[in-house]
Image (tube, rainbow, N blue to C red):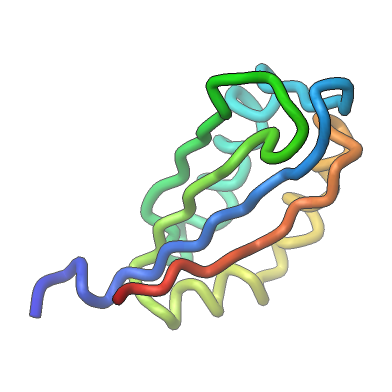
Length: 105
């Protein structure tokens, strides 16, 4: 069993239209560093943002969050830093983030 076998991946997606407000600069330069600073100590290993190649209705942005393991993911989402991280969301978008856990097959 490798270290990667215990890792948990969660995708945070933002669904909308090209007209919806989503400040990529703030997301990349402020929000993602805030997420890592707030939750790295609990076992969040990495966050990466992805954006669709074309501007159309659907997925506006995806963030891949990689956690050390199940316990780390649970610690992050129940941590006292959650309100601080979530308070930053309305600064870069009006869209509601949706969390989806990846399933290994």
